Length: 360
Length: 146
Image 1 (cartoon, each protein chain N blue to C red):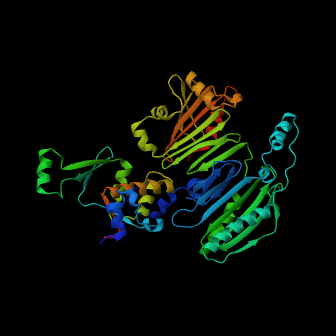
Image 2: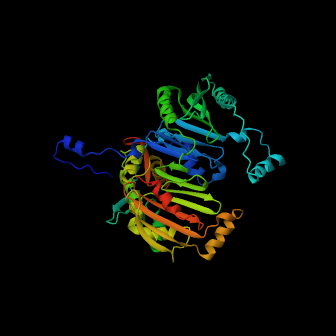
Image 3: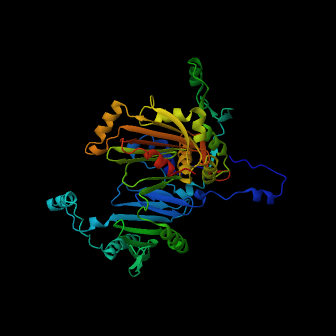
């Protein structure tokens, strides 16, 4: 419990000693499958899908508010004629083999997609016996290089929503994002929507995908795909894979209590994906100033056989080496662990990811 | 104050015989966060130097003379002890009938630097567990049991 210390000093001096809250307390950064945005503090991811090509993300306001942000995305290429015929299955492989460019995909029908979404919302309003109204603005181009075709829309019925649908030419995704709330939340919805659309990105620019949720922020090379996740209270685990190579990211809460019973090394030995015995151990300082332990070395024969079994069909990326590091962040009271199982030709992957991991 | 019939049915029979499909009473999240957990006055507790809190739960209190004699003859202890870790002890101390669940969540989150949602899930699950064991009850207003 935070104890209040009584002082005889005037309140003026207390105010002077106060420092600005860290950025994580003034805003929430959300990143999932290439989608990233900034929202007010304490907003949390409450729903998501595992797929990269098409999926959804839901972020809810804290406390008793009914405000929610819903983002859906789909690959524009999958909207065209891509029925699983023999021609469609073979054509892309033959083109790749002959190094021919993919044919240009037709422009997605944004208005048609939007009308489908609004029709579904209207159906829900009808069920709730509310009058449904919607307004669709004309299509316009957006972005630094005019890469987005976007349509803004609003609706009211069983609640109220303000959103946007767009197609990004760079990542060829169709994204529909909206802020939904109760009918009385009109101004709050408009505020959140302006903040959301000013910060919403649908692809990464630097080759790394941002994964950010529940105070965890890490940038992972964009060709790694999310394989498994565990989001528990006090423990987060994200596992990414590229062929047989893996990046495992873990975050434990209540670090002060854990470190009363275990050292960092003991904790890592209990939770690491491989046995740490025989691996080279060294210490280093993370870019955010935490003392970290690093373990590296060749995978044992059994671990390599297991990796080979798990990476069947991706023979080019069989992991043979392990690198792992663990550190405790006193500022956020969390323990972070990063483990990389990689092939000999991708040295330095761990350092790349550690340097792009924000813990406080 | 008597519990509503639906609640009595669930806590009396429903939770022990799930095939009867007696559903627990639905409390919406907003209303639940305004409840004030209060400790069972029969329990005593002490905080150890190591940070853990030990609850002493009396047994053989509301039993007949014969059962008491049998318990004594078979060396059944008069109390059992439940050990709570540091966070559990912190939440237990706040269960004084004055703090709402919302304020307990906020204080725990601040104290242990937990994300709001993580704190809410952990605290509510823990309070639910304490309630199922009759270690705490919930008040709607200060001093009025729900």
